[in-house]
Amino acid sequence: MEYSIGEVAKILGITPSTLRYYDKEGLLPLVNRTPSGIRTFNQDDLNLLRLVQCLKASGLSIKDIKQFVDWTLLGDETIEERRDMFHRQKAHMEKKMAEMEKTYNAILYKCWFYETACNEGTTDFDHSLTPQKVIELKQNSRLHHEEQTN
Amino acid sequence: MEYSIGEVAKILGITPSTLRYYDKEGLLPLVNRTPSGIRTFNQDDLNLLRLVQCLKASGLSIKDIKQFVDWTLLGDETIEERRDMFHRQKAHMEKKMAEMEKTYNAILYKCWFYETACNEGTTDFDHSLTPQKVIELKQNSRLHHEEQTN
DNA sequence: TCCAAACTTAAAGTTAACTTTAATAGTTAT
DNA sequence: ATAACTATTAAAGTTAACTTTAAGTTTGGA
Image (cartoon, rainbow over all chains, first blue to last red; front, side, top):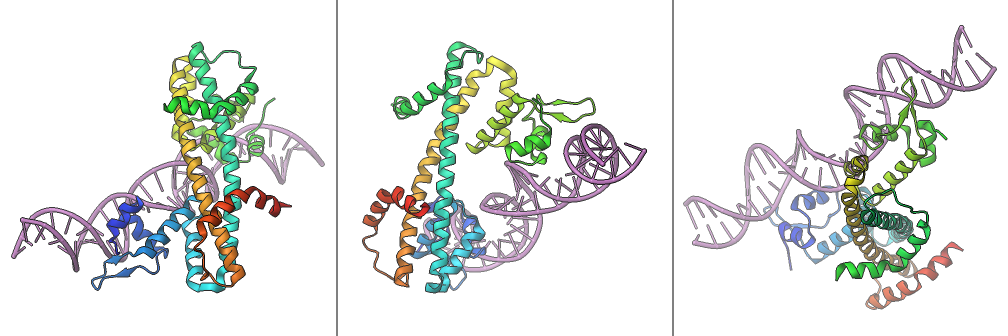
């Protein structure tokens, strides 16, 4: 199965311009063209693009992703570089996820704070028992979520 | 206790230029000045700046954060807007964290793939049992992490 | 008193990752 | 065959969040 740039764009939820930009940056070195110069994407290209999206989501820049693509073009002699890259990215994500967790707890506290302020009609209420409240919120967060979505 | 812009920068791990930029964008409307025009930050300013950093980490733009700061200046009549903002941000983070989890699992799979490729000396090995491997990796991910950090 | 360090402003520069534009060419449906 | 759609390129434009520069002013220590 082959796809036009517009079809690929729809499948991946990006614009054709973005795909051309990725191509220009060297992220898609194996995309075929018709004799008239129009790009035709195959399943491998789609898979590579999904990987590109994953690497982007993991925090890599276009430049870093191009480095990875260049390594894959060189074949088995660059396996270690690629392994190391993924290990670095794994560590990077673990750090980011831990930070996210902290930020999320701070936002949860603010949700409780403004919920209470809304009930009291003022932000000037006694919130000296805050740490306890935060712990309760953490424990009930899944429950709260269910309450809200039902 | 009062702090100079350089001290605040060090405490928060940002540059004085960034602090001046935040001030210019209206994120620090209550920072005092000496008669000669030099900024003096107090504990409230530090707390606001920590909140700004938290909001930024949660995905809000400087513009959005300014909106929040403007609301706080208006006092109790904007409690609902602020509560709604934090609830939106809570939902936003939950979505982002779920996406992150997916991306992380994909990276974990790639770590396993390239680890195996490294042992085999080639990426052209049989990985048809992949889904099973991914599940094992998920279950052992904490263990693996401990192994690596010890 | 004087030097260096730290502060001030306004304005211009930087960077990444697109996005838009303009001008043109190939493709599809009637 | 012609309109409407989709594709092509190169190049310029956009945006956010700073960062740097230039030209000065203020402050603290020897």
